Amino acid sequence: TVLGDAENPVRFTPSDTKKGWGAICIEDVSDTCYFNHLVINGATYGPDPNAFNAAITSHGSHLVLDHVSLEDVILPFYVRYGSAKIRNCYFDGSHASIDNVDIKFASALVEHSTFYGLGELLTMDVVDNCVIRDNKFVCLGSSINMDGIDLDASKNVLIQGNVILNAPDKGISIGESS
Image: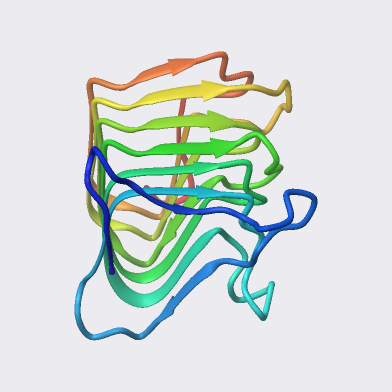
């Protein structure tokens, strides 16, 4: 848990700006993990880059992010199993070429946040009970496989009031079994 406030956000930055510093890796935590008013800059990945491939990676845990900014990171956010509540966040995926924010086998609430970058900006795979509301998605690249929101094999999803800009493929892709 990281609890900053609007006047004093917590900042994770590399001591050497030419090198990244690793990542926040969460696995099978029984309590909810809260991240409030946090700025992450220069993150790379965890000790096992295949399992912990994003600045914040969570497996089997429950996360709440509010006013979190991920900037100049290799890949912003990955959740597998558990849940994610994301509010008022900023995800810079300008260095990522795959799914910038990737949520799999989980439930999710994503609202009032900004997604900026290359690749799929928000991917939901096998997600049940999800709300994606009042967000802004800005696609930077021209890849033919670049969507603002990409749903695969998901159900009970509400998408409402989002703005999606410059998506070269689809703004919202509802694919495989959704």
